[in-house]
Image (tube, rainbow, N blue to C red; front, side):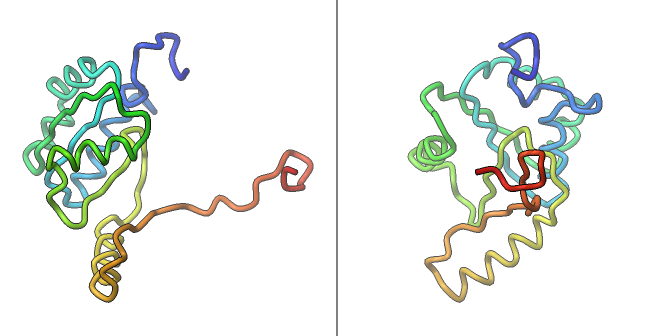
Length: 146
């Protein structure tokens, strides 16, 4: 656990005195995302209360709509995606799926542009994943772990 209180969701933990969810909302708003679904598996009421009173989230609401979804049954991002699809909530192409505790400065507009170009050439290109190469992981002695 990141906190001494196991009931505090990771997205509400601060990093450099800024709540993780605020970083995510700023990132999405800055990249032109117009609609956000915050998918809560546990402690949804804490996240909903935070969104309702957060100055940063309220500021971003002028450029995007924020919705909270509660589903205690989701065990992984795939479960969340299936449920959102079943509810007819995925209406844009492309759409962005990210964890609420991500801090990023990736050029999301550029990634979406590349995704659209790739999909235009090959309609089966339905997903683009952004990853960062962190180099070789070592077990401390300079050798990769066995």
